[in-house]
Each structure stands twice: as C-alpha cells, then as structure tokens.
Image (cartoon, rainbow, N blue to C red; front, side, top):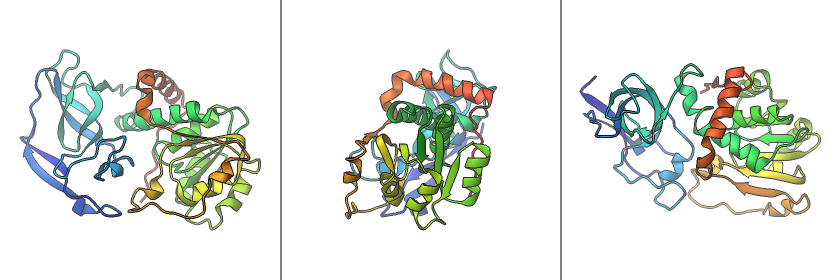
Length: 309
C-alpha cells in the first residue's frame, strides 16, 4: 500500500457556481483503522447534487461542510485492512467516506458489495442511494398506476434514469427531459422511455409536452425545477402526484427568484406535491435493495450510465 494519501478538502465557500478554487488537493499519511474500522482503497466516489447545499453556511437536511473539512460522500472500494470480524481484506464495501485514495469506514455502517450482481460503480448508482431514491420517490410519493403518464426531469441522471425504468415496469407511459440528443436517444432506445425532450434545443416546453404527453401528466418526478417544472404544472391531470426530489436549476442561485406564482395551477387538478428525502426510508432500504438487485439481474433495469461532456 502506498504510504501517502491524496485527499480533497473544502477550501472556500463558492458564490454561484463552484470553481476549482473551492477545492484543494493535499497529500498526507494514509489513515490507520481502529478497532471496529476498515481501511478501504477507494475505487469510485459519488458526486451528488445535494453536495452543493453542503457548501453553504446554512442549516439544511445535510450538515454543511466547514471550510477546511475533508470532502465526504458515497464511496465504494476494497478493504485493504480490517479491524473487524465482519470483513476481511479483499472484500468490497460501500459507505460514506472521504474523497481520498484511502478512507476509514466504520464496519457497522459499511455495506457489502456483491460484484456478481453488478460492477462497482453500480453500487453508487442503481444499487446505491440514487436507486433507492428513485424507488421510494416514485412508488411511495408518485404512486404510479398502469396507464399513467410519468414525466421525469433530469431523466438521464442516476436517479431519473431509474425512475423512468421503474415507471415503465409499472405499466406507465414515460417521458423524460434531458440535456442532449445523445441522452434523449439513450433514454428512448436503451431504457425504454416512450418519449424524451432535449431541453437545451427546445424553445417551448409546454408544446413539446403536448406532443410527448398528449393525455396530460399523472406523475411528475422533479429533479430540476425551473421552467421545466413551470411547463409541467400546466399539464397536470386530476389527482396528479408531484414528487420533489431536487431543484438543481437553482442550487447555484444566490437569492430566491420571484415572479409569476405557479401554485394556482395545482388547485383545479387537486394535485399533491410531496418533497422526499431518502433518509426517511432507512428502515426499508433492504426492500429497495432486493427489488433493485432482482431487476438488474433480470435485465429489467439497466445500470449502464451515460457519460457525456
């Protein structure tokens, strides 16, 4: 094992969109695990939208980072040294660890990774937190029914791509918004979405929805907010369900935008809007894990992630 460890630190709070100045790469000694801990060689780490909120000095559902902190998030890797009888060197695990070559995980909080089901990256995606978010967010908050039209913003992302596939398995018509033709082709040709809209090349989102969702929208899974959500609200059917997972269009905003209010659009359809946090479902994680593994094993859900610049 190498004697030094590269770690990413939070260097300064960004104003607007983060830049490299917000981060600092340092080298130090590799950590040593204590009793009940694992030293893990990080193979993949997850960069998630919620982390932008942790860069603010404000209270939220995720504790903010202090300037000077080592950045932490979902990681998956190989145990190189174990001080626990639960794992041995060579085992693969996932957990919340440092953005570093090597991180220490509490053995009780780490989860085993079965590479016979899927490759390591999938355990930070479809078989990890994003997959569970999609599972509970759609099925519990969205309550899809066969024949419903489900619209997903941020549909080519780690959460949205799984939402669409689960909606399809539940007999729904599925429409996704994504940011390139490559992504929209991936959604329709590989993942089975019925239609996909490239929001970067579309001028009129409402008109595009008229074509893609001619019978209106029964379930909206929102990862984005902004003008896409404004357009979807005009198409909601009676008793529509809106699951608010994220609002990435606004994460770099320095102030709260004001303007035309969209809540009146929820009155006539009696739409229900529900925010969701994956931590609320921690006691049911194994339920989601089992079903997602089964779907991945059968090929019903794909974990091939699109890589675009």
